[in-house]
Image (tube, rainbow, N blue to C red):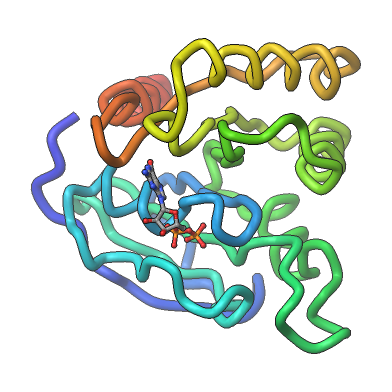
Length: 198
Ligand code: GDP
């Protein structure tokens, strides 16, 4: 898929404030600092589209980006942050759960996982929740350039064994790097395939 236009559209604090659901939506979510903003900038080819390394937890809004006037990229608030108020520290907020469970135009969600780390409890809980809620998702292992591909593959394998063993329909897995651009076309191709299948 070529990205011809990528523009910020709007932000919403909760599901009822989201823009009228028209275009197919593809959402991105992960722990703070997992590389979500960087991945969004990589996919869209727009360096400043999503902000990189803001204060964790600061952006508690659902952000919509219009891509090619064809689909919406949805940047969901990260989960598992510590620097915000107690109330916001809920592992992932109600707005996110509402959006994932009830947004009519949501086609697919990409859950980002840091490829440098063995499976983290918070990711495990989120992925298990997604599977149980029946929300279609894939996994994107970020920052693959930070270690050898052997180490990345070993962390992916651990995740499969420890987290995905009990998931009925195992998600697709992508590996990405903002440095080498690895995975960019795979993720964009996946989105394109899902748009065409609609
Ligand atoms: P977010 O909080 O999930 O939006 O994470 P950011 O996109 O702000 O990334 C957190 C940090 O990881 C930043 O310093 C990024 O430059 C770095 N980072 C993110 N993705 C990659 C990657 O693929 N490779 C490398 N080397 N660094 C990355």
